[in-house]
Image 1 (cartoon, rainbow, N blue to C red):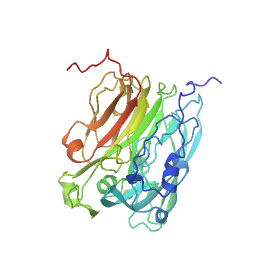
Image 2 (cartoon, helix red, strand yellow):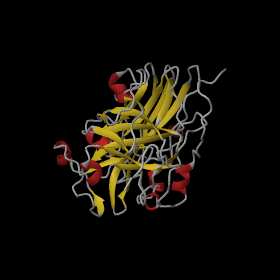
Image 3 (cartoon, helix red, strand yellow):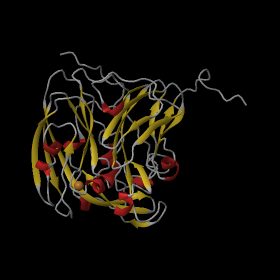
Length: 364
Ligand SMILES: [Cu+2]
């Protein structure tokens, strides 16, 4: 059978994230550079639970490795997937001086990216760690069914439920906790993305990255040290003091978790899920443009081209490609810029290679 896509140019060590965490290194304290790349195998991080929360030093960031992206679908037939999402309430780093009691799927913010093909079926196990304090559940926007599966996946601490669903329609969709206090649970990390590729797949990209934007409401200001407590009243007023990619302040920048990386001549794709719970992202790559993108995660539609800033409302996703003709550092921001300047939502993409003076030149 002829593959739908040719073999990707690059591969990445799918164990990178696990390696960093198991190495006993404080991830937030390492200027690690995420290499970036497309996986060769049709694997998914939701198929491997990273372990109980007590093995997880609370000094670490829970930001998901942005290169932890399942491989593109190359099948031309349907299949069945077994995924597991484990609700874990985990104290972890927001930045180098502060922590917060996050709520997570599989110990990461956002939860793992799931990737299937239109008309695939999924058996999803949803469980809750025994030392959790609250109930959780999952609403997947890729599902026809009551609450997107929320009612059938409601789990108290220590409980486990299973659902099966068919991914009938293509697109990039959010999944999120949907208990009555869902706004708080999403703010604190309980959201992720399921990509249902169209039958014909997506165009090939050289590198794929995964980010989740959300805002966090705490009683203490950004820059405070120690444990920061959640502020429900600020959430009701929709006045967050943090806006974040993946639960980390200025997460993917030098001196923090490190920038994303790519090379000139490549195409970089970003899968972005907007958890909110309340703010729309104005997603923009400074020094570049979304040369091909699928607003609202609408993968059944023709892509739009050369879009500068794309609104990504809470409860939605975005898939955007950038051509990389120039060696530069691209800053991924929310162009409601006070959020990137003052509230922590920032990622760098370092593009290594040749400087093309025909494209840009500082003259004096
Ligand atoms: Cu929850």
